[in-house]
Length: 330
Image (tube, rainbow, N blue to C red; front, side):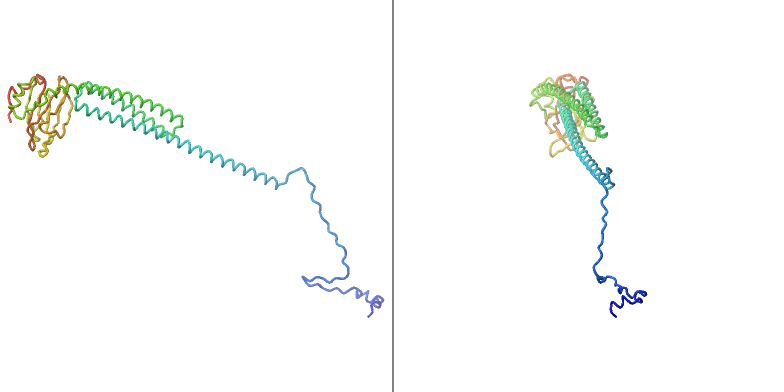
C-alpha cells in the first residue's frame, strides 16, 4: 500500500498503524538511526564559590605536618640526650679509674715502705720507742687511706654527679698527698736510724772481724783478748726453747748437706727468725740498752742440734755466767 493511502486511511491512524515501526533493541546493540538526532544539552554545575573557611582535608594535612615536626624534634632531643649521657658517663668512668689507680699506687708504695721498715727493723733491731712510733704512724696512714677509699666507694655506689666526684677526688688527692708526706718523713727517719745503727754495727763487725772461735778453748782465749762476754749454748729440736741471758733461743731446722740452720730469737718483747744461716757465720742483732750489737755463732751443726755461743758487750748479761765462769754441761 502506498504511503499516501496510509495517510488517507483512518484505520491507520486509529490503530496506530500510521506510526513508524518500533524495533526492540537488544542489550549492547546500537539502535538504528531514524533521522537526525535531536540536540542534547549538558548541564555543568559550576564549582562552589571560594569561601573564607578551611576545609577538613587541609586541617588534617596541617595536623600531620605538625605531628611529623614534633616527632622529629623529640627524636633529635632523645639522640642528643643519649650522646651527652654517654660522653658524661665515659668521662666520669675515666676520672674514677684514674682516682682508683692513684689510691692503688699509694697503697703499693705504703706496702713497699712498710716491708722495708720491717726488714730493716729485723736486721738492725730498732728500739721499742721507735717501733711504737712507726706502728702508730702506719696505723694512722692506713686509717686515712681506708677513709679515702670508703668515700670513693660511696661516691661510685650513689652515682654521684660530676661535682661530687671531683670533690671526692680532691679530698682523696689531699689525703694521698698527706700520706706521701708522712711516708717521706718516715723513710727519712728510717734512713737516719739505719745509718746510725749501720755505723754502730759496722764498728762492732770491725771489732769482731776474724774473731770466731771454733772450740771451747778458742772461745776462752778469745774472751781473754776482747772486752766482751761470751755465753755458750746447745740447742736441739726436741727440747724446749733455751734462754741465754735475756735472749730466748729455739732451733727450727738444720740442713747438714748445706751446713745451714734456722733459729728463732726472742728478745725485747718480739720474735725474729734468722733463716738458712751458715755455720761459722756470725749472726748480728741489736737489743735495747746494748752499747753495740750482739753476735750469735754456731760452730757445731748436727742433724737435729746446734751448738755455739753468744757474744755481748761487757756486763750486759750481768746475772748469767759467761764462758770464763764455767762451762755448761753437754
